[in-house]
Image (cartoon, rainbow, N blue to C red):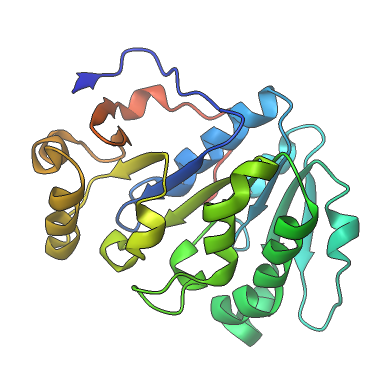
Length: 236
């Protein structure tokens, strides 16, 4: 293990990145930082947010389009994919009426399916990725096809979740990079000790908002929170 002195995280042509940690640990803040790096490189991306304001600051970046999901509205996903850099968020009314579960089932899953079938060379950021899976053992079709077959189309997935012990192992094992915030829940710590060399020792070294980068099978390093500096506001 080595401590990170310069924040030199790459945005490769393709990857599967998992970002996980407890509520409030800084997962979405860091995901937004990754998006900012992608924007600087002129990369295409689409963010599926489950909160009204969480990533809203990213629309300050030139060229980023905002789509608000409203219940009862029909969307032309094919048309949406003509735009290179997109943030998709629910309205407050949408969340009040159908909740995050309804948002995922009625809107985000069909959009992910359209991306897989028709899009190429894009980073897809999926908030609350655990909601796309029928259970902790069975991955959802939309995530599984991106994880298994997205490489051919350079469909780079960034999946953000909370309880990693409840995330399907089939998806966990296909991740190219893991960005892990401090964990306190015993089941998660036990699980990660089995999956990541020396996890407990690394976890004990983390301060609030520090994180571990793990590249399988055994590369780890600690990223200090001071190095993750955003150019846009994060609403959280």
